[in-house]
Length: 101
Image (cartoon, rainbow, N blue to C red; front, side, top):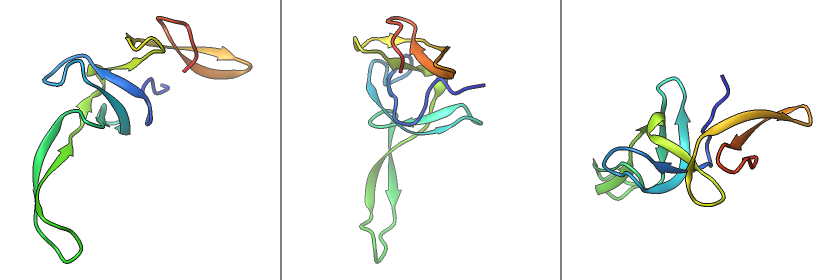
């Protein structure tokens, strides 16, 4: 099945502690059904100091379930994603506006 959410998409969180926050997808794990979004689901991770990197308490974005994310349309609202064929190519489009993504 084609991916409804991909790396680089601007999304909004629908459920959880970060509900309502928006961000850009940095990576997707389709097998686990999770994605990492900038500025969402942040946790503090402790890093040991090394010769190359400074140690300390570093914020890290953790994966969030794909079902809790929705793509943001041109109006800035959450929308579902549909598929249609344009010029012989399969394209994603926003169900609210009908615009190709």
